[in-house]
Image (cartoon, rainbow, N blue to C red):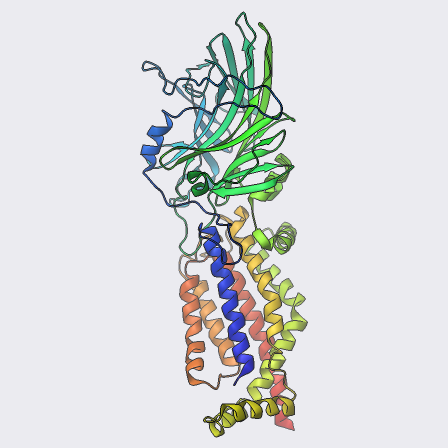
Amino acid sequence: MDIKRTVLWVVFSVSLLFLWDQWQRHNGQPSLFFPGTAQTAPAASGPANAAAGASASADVPQASAVAGTPAASASAVPAVAAADAKGEIITITTDVVKADIDTLGGELKHLELLTQKDTVDPTKNLVLFDSSATRTYLAETGLIGGPFPNHKSPFTALPGVRTLDNGNQVQLVLESTEGGVKLTKTFTFKRGDYSIDVKHVVTNESAAPVSPSLYLQLVRDGNAPAGEQRFVHTFTGAAVYTEGSKFQKFAFDKIEDGKADHATKSDNGWFAIIQHYFVSAFIPQGSAPREIFTKKIATNLYAVGNILPMGTIAPGASATLDASLYSGPEETAVLEKIAPGLTLVKDYGWQKIIAEPIFWLMTQIHKALGNWGWTIIALTVLIKLAFFPLSAASYRSMAKMKLVTPKMTSIRERFKSEPQKMNQAMMELYKTEKINPLGGCLPIVIQIPVFLSLYSVLLSSVEFRNAPWLGWIHDLAAPDPFYILPVLMAVSMFIQTKLNPTPPDPMQAKVMMFMPLIFSVMFFFFPSGLVLYWVTNNVLSIAQQWVITRKMGAGPAKA
């Protein structure tokens, strides 16, 4: 029995099993190894336009006691806006975003990222927040604890500049008064910044003290982003972070089932909605007690948010609460400056301990080369150099196995009806030729976590999105449009197969011959950056294996 070949097949199968498990976890299915870690949005349970209609009639959150703070009034604002209430859409434009804010409720209901191209139609800009027939994704704020202004109340927009021209920031100020309480929302947009400062000033214009609570919430349908690649499914859902409980993320189906496991009270942290490459996160400023909630609003429509008591406000007095809303790409260098733990939205899972150093190294290489495609190639070379001794040992073992393949075939023929004697003869051959049948396995096992971690880095890093390499590759995060790299990968795998020892078993040999074709078809749908890594790695492996095999073959030939 060819022990080495069998072990290699086992290792290869385990590798595919881990890749499949990672895919299942990203696709919301239960993990084979880590129960309870399904991480991706469920399939749509209803059309987004129905969800959008339901949003307009949804209740706002109810306040409750938070971190020892007295409970606010449990009364809710009206479920729907007044019949004659009409809002005005105010558009704010900066150098990086174009935002539409409705004066009816002060909702942020459309956000276009001017520096990011749409996945489906690259001629258009990517849209995150939206309220349309196909997407519901909103940022809402308001007051509870009385008949106070909320995200269904009519606001008045104060006059001001709406476009960032020569200045560094542009503001929109909205005001609404209800129940003797005036709420002033101030949205501040800054040059080159995806963060929006959202300031809430509550003024008590009544004759009695009031105790309102401010709620911040993100509302989204459960549909996956349009244009997701086949075979590459990623997480879409909500996340919560506190210093005590750290990072917790959960798919929308967990909210649907009431099983979203997260911290419920804190005086710090943030909450977010995550999709592939992009995140929207509300970060209340300062150490303010808060309740953290998630809820199903309507069919296929979910919310995550905070309720922050503002204390007792005397007549004629005011209270202020500041928050920041980041809605943009998951760029590590940007996220780490905004809030503690925000970089964790790029969740590498169990590969984090390897993936983070790999990404750091890639950023350093990119600073020198200025191109992410060449960065991937340079990283592959460095990884290959790091594993050179192990790879060399593996290829030497394969070369020895290839030299004795005729003897192994002869033994199989002589003892094909006597398996026990065949195994004994094989062991004697390994001993005589000083071959370790497991010699080529350890290097492969060690490199599997590195490959899986690099896969996570390439899949999770928005830096590769719309990043060109050369020629026909204009987006390293998208599949090769002409399938040139997958074909090159198939050719390189075929050459590697020829350099490896031919399996004595004819059926096994045929399977190995078809393996390059199977892999190339699968890699048609993989990001071209990942295929570029694989092709580069294969080319380097072929060169190393050819040199070692030639040297190993020259020795016996001269002898």
